[in-house]
Image (cartoon, rainbow, N blue to C red):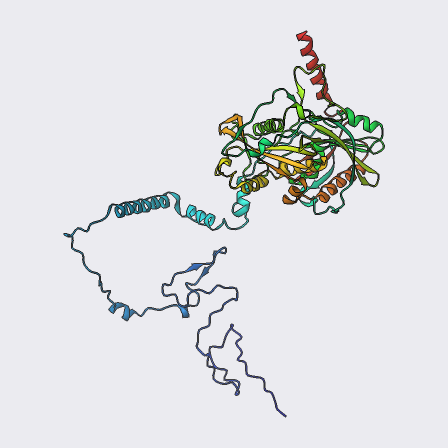
Length: 554
């Protein structure tokens, strides 16, 4: 029977590796072939460097500041023999050039030499002025800023670009916070359903004009000036001021009342950056009214809200502040939606006229081409959402359309639309999807809610970068709302899951008035319970001022 003998292992209690001397206490121990050989400890994660470093330079390990090489493992370091060094003599084999012989240098070579000398001089000056600490910081920024620290990497950029914004409404001492929602975790906790609620039309109001096909041929090479429609009246009326929604609520036709602007805003609120607020009133019986404050910034469009470098208020008197850009974008949007339509000849009147237009007090104004489509969405569990949606025109006399306008303003490092729209329109749209993700998501959600067949998007630019009054239409494009929603990763099931969450959130609280607001600097939603007369005192003061002005004129 074969036997197995355990091989001898030399003990070394003092350190790792083979012992320095043979184990004489064990008669079976063979003479160690590794005796008196140097041993260098290593890790499997260490990078392999040079096989032999004859320069003796010490390398510093990145991130730790510890020294590698140098005095460590001196057995492996190259040792110079003193006798050999003393007898060593460097022999110069280069040819000596005569100082009397002048070599011809071409002008191009002379310019290159001069440029190189200037670069060397500038580099020395920068090193002398900056010092070693600044050079190390510059090297860290070149390598990526040292990771995700506070002042380096992505964290550093966010810190530098951070803008402290003010809340859209000031929180009063008598407001009571009842809910706190994290927008970043909100979508993860939703139970997404692919089922879209059933919908039925209740009332049609207003009228629609036919779309002008000539605007399909507009291009950056042949732009069309944007006209100012000073005789058109727009009505961004809130929920409680809508007489049609009020009548439907009295008749018991639904229990959730809202407008498409507010509904689309809530559906896509996770993409918002700027602060905003909404007023929610819960009546006895569980009826909910979602409102906006009068004279708030809710109806104004935002520009580059989700961009890496959004507009700032560094120059309060400039034309590129967020407020002035929002006013400019809203005006462009209203003028564009009316200019791309034909005259009154191809107008389609709905069942009822515009509920907000007064013939006696029009002052030469006429309502804009808008059809108000009141729709009821059945969410189940005795939840019926009645929403006022908007349509802006007719395509081929059978298809309903919505119209929106993207506007360009000068940004550092960006290529002008006139140079890219005709050849790279997809790239322009991709940039807008990144810089205006929230605005485009709201437009898409509004088009889906209204049941539009087409969504028209126009690309409008300034005639000159410093003129924010005159604009030109550089291109237009039709999109199907459902296809566009897929392109921007907007799910209808997720949209309605968000609304169900807000409705269930309000149902567990008592009756009264509430304010839902987004934190100006954090992705957090806060729900406050406010007194019943909140925001009503301001309305009364405005009415008194208007009455006083009318009496003075009389």
